[in-house]
Length: 444
Ligand code: GLY
Ligand code: MN
Ligand code: MN
Image 1 (tube, rainbow, N blue to C red):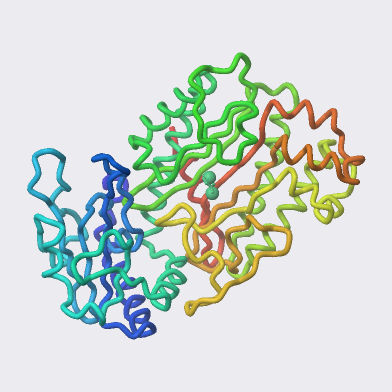
Image 2 (cartoon, rainbow, N blue to C red; image 1 turned 180 degrees about the vertical axis):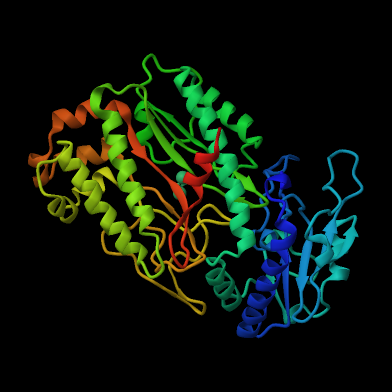
């Protein structure tokens, strides 16, 4: 897959230098001498010998593109080369992690260990001088993660600013995801079930569900109204009216997060509603600019989406009163988006500064995941939607605003479920870079 990005050799050293500089500051802030990061373990299920799927510590994969090395540890001491204790067990039952290889290896001192407990000999002697980042289950004798808040706050805050290397990886994650999206759309057009569309997606992405950055949402018809629909109907519906797919891909530990919605036909007005949301979404993406307050963009999206509801005859009140009365929130009941990177919902979306603190969400918008102002290097999703959610519509019916809703029209749209359009967008010094649209444009 590196053939997609032959320049990683060139980009990685600057990424590593940035992480070292950030770690230097974070350690100073916390009063520690070493940053120690455990990849994590894969604990077994209760009363069973089957492990849960392994999910690597995001701090670990920030430093190196290794996502399948449970039991490995990374040590960084300011001024020194980082050290990797890499667990490659002697084991003929399982596939053991591959020997370290690739563009990042010349930058580390690597020791191979054969048992998890051997790592201790390669970690600093005095655990009290270490910021040890990871899950409690990774603890070794006398060496347990302490996750100091001051260090985490600093590292998490800085993580929002992606290096050129990280952006290159996220471009690839978008290329893989958009290719698979095209295949999924074709499967929908061919009348396949949610289950089979999902299989087609994973086959095209060449990723299993444990490798994907989150559980795919593959929703036909009214299932699109369930925001986190992760069931997979095995039989196609009698009539497929609509298809909402929220599915990403991973590359070297970085995520893409992509949603598209399709109408089965141009009749019935659903395609027109998709087109309007799509145009609004592109307008929001264009506002991903340095200095833009993300909560203000979210509120702007409420006004724009309420305008669409009015233009298309779902509501009779003004867009302003739809936002004020909470009607826009019935149809758009989630946040406009979030930071993305090593985790699909990346950390520190609410963080006021590198030393912590919280930027409050706007009142009445509890599901917004990002309250920071946008700055160059941040990657955010822009994912507006309009949905016909039975539960929320039933509540709205009991409110005074109900008289200004065209319920007959709303009822004819319940069978479509909803619309979401989601791209991953980089804030730069100038024009935003839409990773997802650029990748879709390159799919044959
Ligand atoms: N796929 C989860 C989200 O869009 O946030
Ligand atoms: Mn998202
Ligand atoms: Mn998504």
